[in-house]
Length: 206
Image 1 (cartoon, one colour):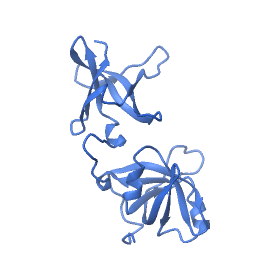
Image 2: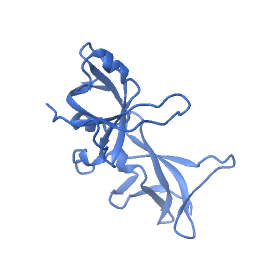
Image 3: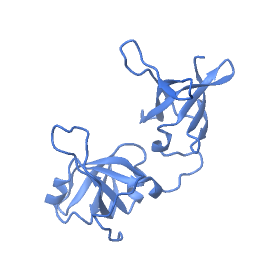
Image 4: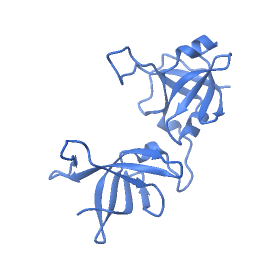
């Protein structure tokens, strides 16, 4: 059983959004969560989830402050995760949580195996490719997606400015220029999470 938590305790600064409550599950107050990525095992391992409620209409995309919820039990259910929370005594309370996002502190993630990486750690990494035998910056990883066979990096193209800052590249319509790169060893040969840097053989323009 999870350790009791104070629902009013201050939220950790390193919270990572990992899923969204989509419905109640069963008649005993369990909730069903749709994980955002292959990192769903983090939700299963966490003893405390932090929930954020969507704010009223007119503030789309905004969420309230995080409230702690102890996880009494959780398990996979198809492509979703179902869980019993200590703050949800019955189905009506579970239904009221529909739309809440689920967060877990990065410090609570289980250690990853060698050559395995949490998707959240790849986002924000500088991505380098090759041009005439040299390593050249392509851009910044904006998102990691799953195409069913492997992960795919969505990289926003960027160049380095005179002061070392990274400047996003835009097309003629003012939209970000992006490239999709399979996150497989055949292309991405070096992953340096500590320095937020990925090295690949992906063709890069000089």
